[in-house]
Image (cartoon, rainbow, N blue to C red; front, side, top):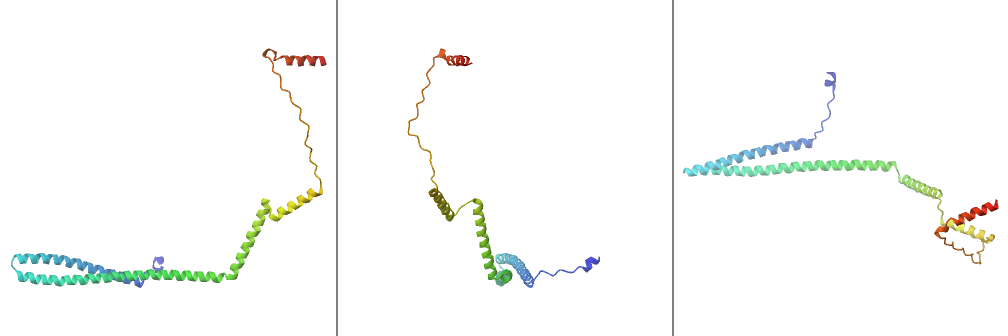
Length: 209
């Protein structure tokens, strides 16, 4: 129980503009209700005027139509008032949106201002220079690891190769000028003599032993 009575009430989020909009809408709804009620009454009086004319009571029908005419004018004024109320509600709601936009812009400007104060132009230039140096240093490391050579390195290698070539005579093997001996083609053997070379080889081996 102590927590219930000791609880602090939260501040209301309803603004004066919200209350004004609510009141305007309530007045608009009342006028619309009045407009609807008068419209139904006018329809009844018009029907009654027709009946009076049929009954020959022209004077009463004329008085009733004059009353109807006056109420028609009231309906026109009511419609104008409803339009004014709705336009005022729209204007207030639009102003509320504009206020929120302006408030958002103000917060954004304050945020940018605090960020600019936290980091000066010199700090930005220093960070950019350090970043560029780090990128260049990483590129050099990548080139060393990948084994790529610059144009200056290529020139140095060619110069060293030329110096080695001029300092030592490299002897190359001579190309033979005599023609190579012809290889005899194997003789064709008859089908019945296919095993003769093998037997002759066996006989030579036995004699050598």
